[in-house]
Image (cartoon, rainbow, N blue to C red; front, top):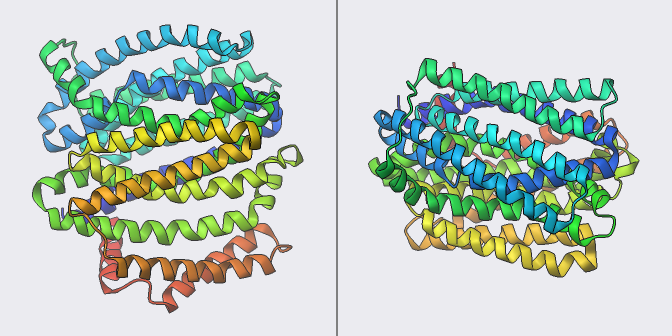
Length: 481
């Protein structure tokens, strides 16, 4: 199976589940936000953000390292799985101990503290599931990861609807996260044992020390990434007088962006094990993959940014209701971070695949510090708008630094090619945007359909896809069938 076929197999395996995750994630977030209201939704969002930050310490990069190393040598899977699960149990206990004084220092209410504890338990089980996903990715069996992710979204959707029908409070909603994570963990555990690895208790201290040392750059990088993904919600909650409500408004828009990020993450997840192999076998092919990946991400993301900005009022009011009208301006700003994060995902995975994880760690570390500083400056003066601008600016700086580093080590992009891609994507998006403006009072779904069609037609007229692209698409189609 050649590179294109493997990419196609992995992407189409993930595609169905990710579409399900995208749709169900959108709907259960909408129902939950409308039912709970901005204040209670803000409390739950604060808990999710806080536990996401602490949750990184239960993994410290071991999942990424497992995918990278097992993809090179599948015989290592049993050793990695056995030792890493043991390490995660120990790290989870240590992290949980540190959460307690941290919440006391922040001064959370008893209700918020309890919700944080419940959500953190779900994060632990999700961390274990991610270990199994790393094995599935390394074997390039993405269909099993798709099953787990699809099950998670389906159960979350069903659980949220049940909670609303039973008039549950925000504490019960947090328990849904825990119950779903346990069920998904048990499913992934069973698949991994049945299809891939025979699990046995193993404590190899030499291997553990080596693994911790090698995973640390990935872990530190993940810590920094999570900080500038979620620290804004935590800081808004602490620094603004009506923090819970503001966090609710902010996360209504931010959740839309995170749901959109499922689309490019599907591509980068499928690409990572292949990039790791290509680094050893064909550097020229890896450069080709980088160029094509950036082209397709720009073509995909630029119209989404354009359409979201123009339709943000309709999106927010239709999805969350008038109570979240402040989220409109937040979505207009934050959608740019979707574009920056999508590009950064390609650059980041490439750096990891070519053993430049230390360099990536430094870059995202600078980004995390910059994000905190900008939030400290902007939030007191501009509240949620300031936090949104801080997020965008941070991600832009991070991808710029990644671009410079990759260019210096030989993974540079020709300016002419890059400008050509940008011109055709932007031009097609502008024409699409004009249609969106004229159709502002037309049915929302019809507006989206017509605008997407116009974008695709304009791309075709501008010859955005060359013969090489068409050959790749044919290969993808043949592989998918």
